[in-house]
Image (cartoon, rainbow, N blue to C red; front, side, top):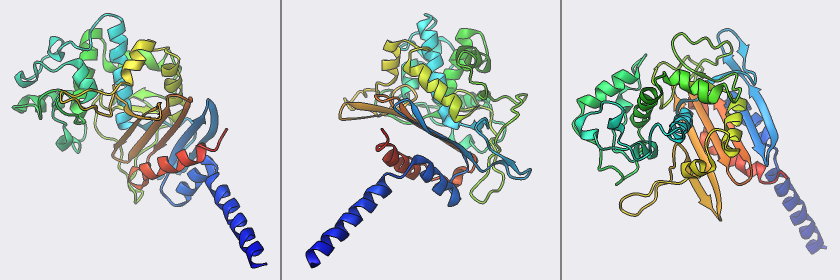
Length: 343
C-alpha cells in the first residue's frame, strides 16, 4: 500500500513539475511585471508564429500615459545592427569594401590610420570606447571624434583581441555619411525604416517628434531619460513589432544578400587563432549545429533585448523604460525555457 501511495505521489509531483515547465511566455512576462521588474513591450515568436505580443505599464508616469504596442522605446546598442546592415548595403552597391581602411573615407588620428571597416564591425579594431563621456548630456559624434583625437594609441593591436567599442560604431556612422553623401538619419530611413514600413522607428535628432515615445526611468521610477545624441552606436527608438519586421527582412535577404547575411553571422577570427563570439553587430552562439544571434542595449532608463534563433524563425524582443529594474539575462533564460515546449 505504501508503495502504491508513494508511486502516486511521485506521479503527481512529476505532473506538477511538467506543468510548471510548460508555463506560457505571457505568464512569465506578467510575473516580471507584477514583481516590478518589467515595464514595457514584448514580442515573442516561435517558428514564425507570434506567441506573446503585449505592452505593460506606463510610457509616461507623470502624465499617467500607458504604453501600447506602438510605443517607441530607446533601443541603445540595438541600433548597431542597423549600422552594420547599412554598411553591408553600401558594400553591395560597390561604394566601399570591408577590408578598406576607415581612414580612406574620414579623418582619423594617426594611431588609427590602418584600422579597417571589418575590424570596426567586429570590435577588433583597438579603438577606445568612450565610456567616460556617457554621462555628458547632448553628447555628439563630433565630441567623441575629438576625444579620440586627444588619445595617443589604440587599446591593442587590431585583430589581436575583441573589445566592445561604441566609438568604433560612431566611426562607421561617419563613414556611412561620407560615402552616401547623406546624414545617418536620412540613409537609415531610406534604406531600412521606410522600405520595411517600420512606422514607429526613428533615428533620434533634437527636432524629431515621436508622438508615442516612452520616457526613461530608473528602478525607483524617477526620470532617467535618454540624453545623448550619438549615432551609429545608438540613437534609435523602435518597437518590438518594427524590430520583428527588421528580423524578417534579414531572414528573407530583402536588405542584404544571402552571402552577406552569412558573413554578418560569422564571428571574427583573431590573429592568435581564437574565434570571438561577435559577427557584424550580433553576438553569435552555435550549439549542435544551430545558430542564434543576439544583441542587447542599455542606457539611462532603457534596456533592450533582441534574441534570434536563426534556424527556426523564432525570436524574443523586449524593450523597457525601467532599465535598472529589468534582469535581462534572467528574463531571457525564463522565456527560452517556456518557448521550447510550444509547437
